[in-house]
Length: 114
Length: 115
Image (cartoon, rainbow over all chains, first blue to last red; front, side):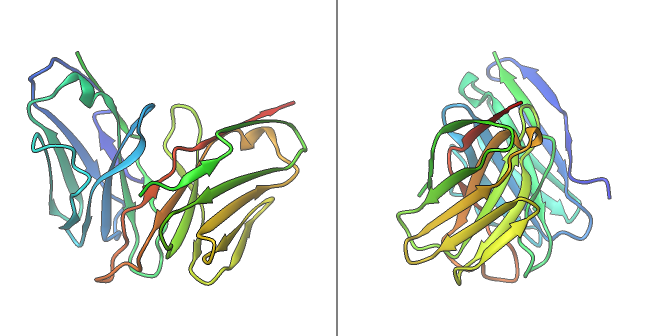
């Protein structure tokens, strides 16, 4: 299995620009999670989906952040407009069906907003 | 609410033992343990569900005391490969709807193993 795939791996953008992060979960997994990791705040849950439906987006910091999961094999996290404080590593993780709860993390996208 | 991990960092010699603690101010349904090496993604180690069970994985084991809302990770006869940052992630309620639940992670414990 290829594991969780994220793109791009690195993104450098200027303040005010739109940023789109992409994630392909492991085939057959029905839950998908977006996390953000910074030195100050650690690993934070932003939003998660079960069966492509957003379940909890209370971790999304502001309206500038949005996430979609149009089908079982693709999700996006969009930041518009981006700000320097959005700089972080963004991880996508997926989890198998009910009864098996471990989460498999993708390699992450390192976002730098200047 | 974010679980509290202790210690924040620990330095060991190869072969020594370590204990990493994770405590919550709210009732717990499950505790997950992950290890992250520098520049890499977190990797799943084990999950403990409500019921106070203890699990093991090679020389790494963990316990879960739901009454105390605590979990501990035990690393025995540590190896150089155990170096990294250990995170506990918690769920406060049983997931609904047949799917998994998002985790709330502690700030991590940095473990350095020296030869």
